[in-house]
Length: 174
Image 1: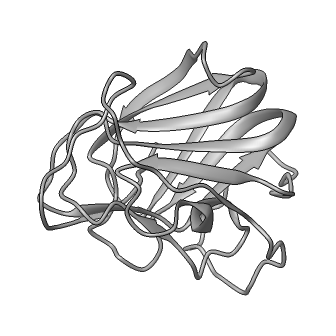
Image 2: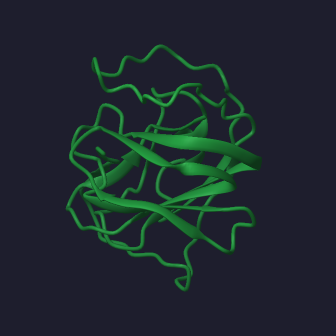
Image 3: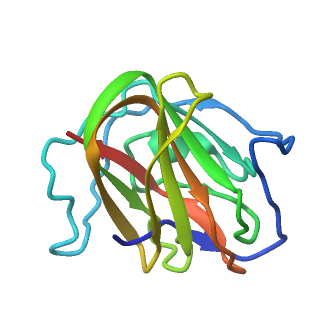
């Protein structure tokens, strides 16, 4: 497994019980612009699932959460705050999706990956099941999970870093 993203500034923490202002935006641009992952870093599972009309929310809301699910690796969501446990990005794919691998790319901000994280899935956005936990080591994190069917995917930061956390692309693979 590899990692998510983050860079530095003011600290902020969030949790399900913390009141966080978050923005929700709908992904309108489903065209994927050219982006090249390093050789050997591509997910192995197979077919990429298109983002469709995915939306995203985050705590802290930072900079445009929808950019993490717009299918365009040249755009990104950033926390705009130092990494702290409890920060999260939640993607809503509109309908349940079947997947067995998730790729999280921090984009060109090489220090902006989550130092440690928890990946969870839900069908209703309220009841979550943990799929995986791990430590980040760089730009790309590829996580194999048991075959999963879920409408929502949430990545929660469980570590700390003075760097912001950024996600340029969250992709599901069947």
